[in-house]
Length: 127
Image (cartoon, rainbow, N blue to C red; front, side, top):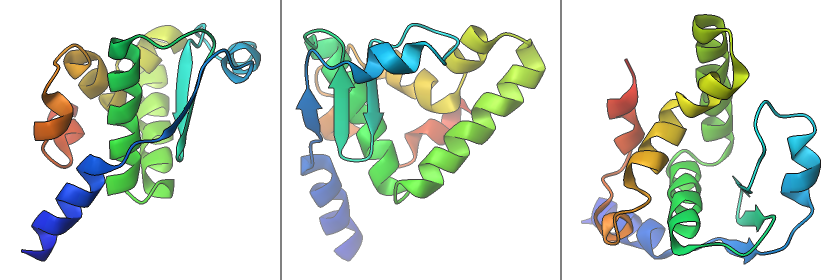
């Protein structure tokens, strides 16, 4: 019963969204990709106006971070990226093949996904 309450609480949470932010523009100078939007902690910054798909994508990341108490998701994200960077020797591919990105990209067009998203669903993308 307590676990269900926690799950409901996490599903109901939404990050603070910021459109027309310079943060993704700035971070793109250091990243292997051009960043359109980024979720970090309770904040989502987008360089333009977020579409519903982008919004869902970033909320999936927010839920991943919540279920892993933020810092553990950031560590796991970095490790997944580094493993992929060694595997593919290409930063853009390493980003796209990150387990957290794969879950988000596979489900960001599903309108009801956030309501039904299983906890730790990103685990099924580990190979």
